Length: 116
Length: 112
Image (cartoon, rainbow over all chains, first blue to last red; front, side):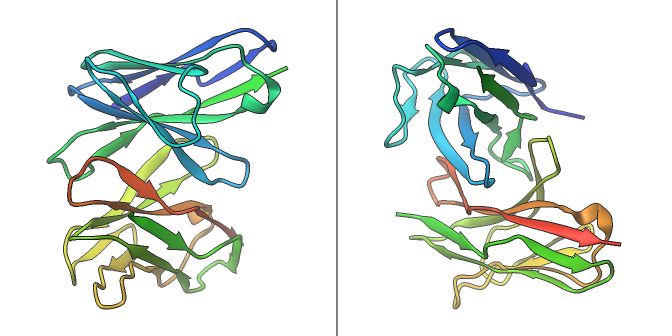
């Protein structure tokens, strides 16, 4: 079964509002989680690395004030898209790092965000 | 820095055809290499992996061999099925194991 749960699976919001996406590791503790954004032509862009108890590390070109990441516990990381605009509409995918396992990176099923 | 380059799609094949999706990488040290698959509307799933040179990863009829001399990790399957239609991502995890870098993905469509 799924070891990383991402919620919601889809969300529609109005321009200017904020949206929070949750990523939970279900049966292991994840000190490190990653947030990706997938563009229409399937390209997967790493947005940021989320480390429990510390500030997230953002990739170049990603606005940290717009995409707020909080990793307050070993099983939960959240991504908040603040003051969303239509160009933020995308598929957001989280993943959790599980070192030492056959599959080190476990993915959530993604969140489809549509900003109207 | 580390990078992954994979062949652009889309790739369209008939059922039972032979599949190759090329992937090459640039990395320092000894990275681990992966192929992930994404079915429509879903997240990514690990398809196979190889952690050192000459290792062959295999799963569900797919294979890929870690070739250090050519810095490649091409994905192959001898006879594809309609259910293999998905997007395939080649990926690399560096020696520090801090993050995984993905290729741009290749969309595969199999027609009956």
